[in-house]
Image 1 (cartoon, rainbow, N blue to C red):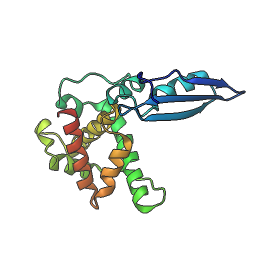
Image 2 (spheres, helix red, strand yellow):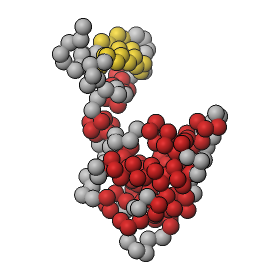
Image 3 (cartoon, rainbow, N blue to C red):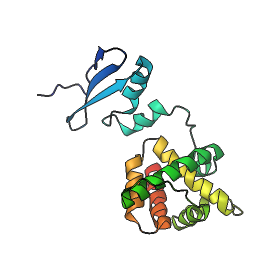
Length: 188
């Protein structure tokens, strides 16, 4: 029988030198989810408690872990943010590497070419949000910024991005669909 509240106080058992936490959460459908965390310090344990439970509302998940995300007034600001693009470069390469690894069945590291991302940005209809003289490299930066931004905000989990990229034979097509979905999630 489920209780009416949607969270319980976690039980902490201190073992030397590892801390074990068992936490029970309830989703909107009142399905019980239990997670067990192992940590070498209370600080690690506390941060894991806030970022791991999938039953927390999406809108709060990103805010608890990624407090450094600035507020953007519009899509153009996201697409032109150089710091987001720098982080997005690493994230997009990781996402792409995971999709390739999942398809091939073995670990693979890959770097996404800027031409591919610029093509995907154009096909997704997002080129119009950038100044007319924006070169291919800056277009790729814009794609990377948008993709990492929706992930940071908790709007598109890593697994969803990997699954989208994995579905398409052509990487540009996969990234195009990823960008279209990212825009829809930001501007419903």
